[in-house]
Image (cartoon, rainbow, N blue to C red):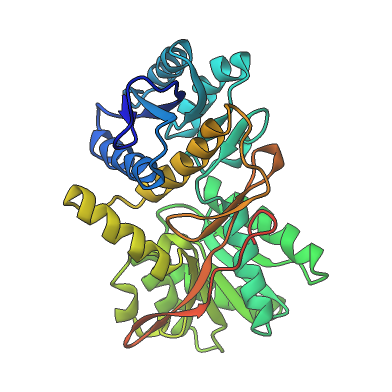
Length: 347
């Protein structure tokens, strides 16, 4: 049980279930997320809200058990669980009880019927990058990434965003996971030469694969489009060491806001917050707002300052997320465009 500091034991409280992996291989992450939820509650100092941490054990069966336990103990909102499989399992008893779920998954297929997806989704990323590229003058955009679930969803969202903007369909090249990145970059350059050049190119890979892909593009002997990366580039200090990525941009958390959250977390718990701890902080703040106003009605349509920037809960289980556009320079990462207040998913 977690309550706000100074809370009297005689006050009637609204209960919020926290479904977290407190044992198993993700136990360290679960503890960091629990700490972030506690921080959100302590900052609000509302004695009417009580958090019930329950261990999902990092499994679907564990998530369903944790949800049922929290509901039996009177939870009017559930926060978590972590993965799409766990979310699907926990959603069954939650929907039967009419209790909303604020899940940490980024799988948009889980959204709706009382479940909100709070993870960073491919749609949010694609729309933010398309907006930034078009604002920068791009009229034809490419996507180069792995042929996996993230890459396919990113491509679909990018097609939709460009169609809504009245722009040509993107030039999409999804490659087999594990294929040689530098060669993929050269192959994309050849395809763009044959099918028409692109003004901007989104790389869905991260880390070493992104750096090698950029090298391949630069070595192809053609004009390299402006490069963009996804939120997966956030926190990668090695990107700026690759000359081919200097001047590239990516969508990510508002650094000023995130640094503020990280500093408060460090001061409270004496350790660095996990990246996903910010999502737990946001979910806890939203759930506490609903609980202290009487129970299960989430604050839909209201903009909030989250751990990574502005967010807004939308109908049908969607989340509007304001993401900054960050640019890689020799001197470090700089903010090219601040995070906008979201008005729709992926603003």
